Amino acid sequence: MAPVALALVTLAWRPALQHQPDGVELTAVRFFRGGQTTLIDGFCRVPFSILSPLSSGDAGYHVDVKVLDDSGNELYNDGWSESVSAGVLSMPGGSAIEPFKFVAKTGAYRIDVSVRDSASGSETSSSTSVSAFTERPEVSDLLLTSDLRRASPDDTVPHPGEIRKGALFITATTRPVLTPHLAKLYYYVEAYPAAGGAVTAVAHIVGAGDHEIIASAPDTTVVPAGGGILASGMDLTGLPPGDYHLQLAVTVGDSTVTRSAPFTMAGFATDSVVQATAGRRGGAADQFASATDAQLDSLYAPLVYLQTSDEQGVWNGLSRQGKINYLRAFWAKRGANAEAAYYQAVAETNRRFGEGGAGRVPGWRTDRGRIFLKNGPPDEVLSRPLAAGTQPYEVWKYTRGKLRKYVFYDETGFGHYELIYTNDTHEVSRPNWQDLLGQQAVQDVMNF
Image 1 (cartoon, rainbow, N blue to C red):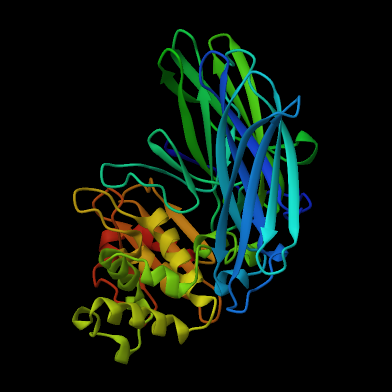
Image 2: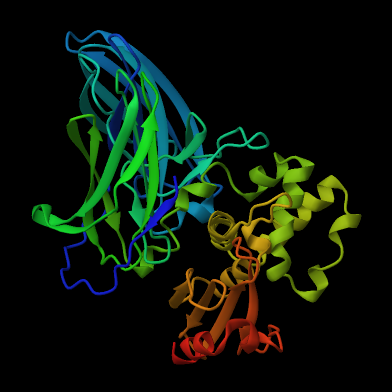
């Protein structure tokens, strides 16, 4: 599952960007489960543009899902309600993904989804057709996502908006939307070789007219008899805005099968809203009131980078209700959208910059995470993971306002990047940073 880094620096071809539709979007992905049984994962995208605010400023909606066979008989029926906080509702382009799943025998089916707005009572509907597998396929359908992570003994419950596939948690989506600063795309498929053996996957990024932009190196996995998982990631930093497909060519024995799924690369303006679903389940008061004591502490800890002097040093002396009141007051001072945007950024730093080992460090507590949270994504990044004559290092440059550079150095060689030099007067540089990097790397930094 190691990410494949793709250098996309000079691409002259520019496809037209197609925005996500305003209506309810519906997709279905099929996985073989033996005999005549197919597991179907469904994903429904609910755009907040179809919702009206309630008197509280929040919004709500009810989802109904029905699955009918080709004779009109009902196979599956489910419904549930969700709420959207006022801060998240106001984000332009925000939406929520509602996942569901059902098991079907061989046959053709129609999925009907309707979303009813709690404020106005208006309904928006969508339908799609799906056929269960008639026999064992070589490969399942292709599932794309903007985030994928492994479960662990201490992390067994999916986060809101995630589904679980074996040992993997996958962020649910109908069509991943990437941005210049959130540019990782992950795929998940299942291969079903009857006898087991080596399975090779090659990912192709294609645009309009099946114009191939780039292809990954072959990735070979030994799959046991009966089936196994193929999952990997691609860093698409530098891919121009537009609509694309990932075409995955999977070779099982002498047979090669291609599966395809769409995704979008959006522009810089989408960075703050592409993950707007994170805060949809209730407003700040609901989130804090329902949190455990440990969760309250985890919601408080990353605020160290935002606190004013009068907000510091009081947390440990507060009662549970006092902590809830503190968090409500803290975010009330900072505007309706600040809470969701900041916790979204914290989640992103944890995903990008978390450091492993026995004493695992969450991303927000690392040097790179701190700079990311304080300044936002860098405008330019110079990455040297295999630098000659020195350890790995990265240089971040911010060109908005005063020019700022930050040099992060992995002295251990195990992914522990520390800030060793910056021209930011609010941060500290190491006196020997040039000796650590070496002359060639220092010149590289200065020329960047």
